[in-house]
Length: 146
Image (cartoon, rainbow, N blue to C red; front, side, top):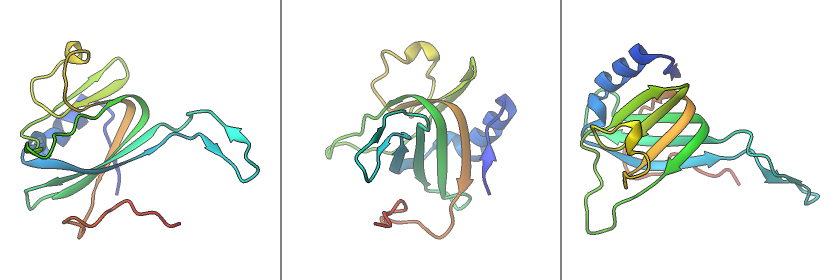
């Protein structure tokens, strides 16, 4: 079942339920632009979907794996740690402002930090999420049916 983040109460409940993403990691992501080239090689060059799906795994019994689906993506900046550093999320920040939802992989962030923060940031028009059961571990969740 999908749940939408429509207002600040939804956001606060979501963050409280996930302990602000404490002891979590980004496991995988999938982006759908909406643009494509068809079989006749004609291009549809419009990014009319802009959907980013993010799988988070957590070290908690309740909701150990969730999928977040950001729709109407406005900004996505991924800054993964290299092999020499740990990539766990200790806390995160979510903000609703001016019709957009923002997610930072660090606590205490503000909209004013967008240009200077060097971690992972997502900004979109909408966010919905769901809990995923029985999929923990390294096996890929987003697989290709090709």
